Image (cartoon, rainbow, N blue to C red; front, side, top):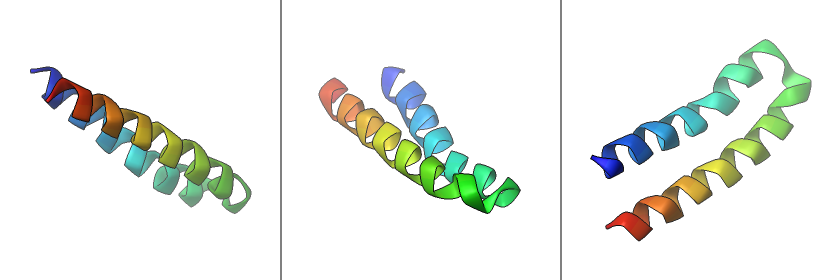
Length: 50
């Protein structure tokens, strides 16, 4: 159950930069760095629960 929630959060963070990037090119690099750090945090959290 916890892994499903974490997978959903990870998926949201990975698509977030693409969504923000579609609206503004200037914010896309910031969104990519935020998204990648957030997804790595979510990935490590997913690994911790296994």
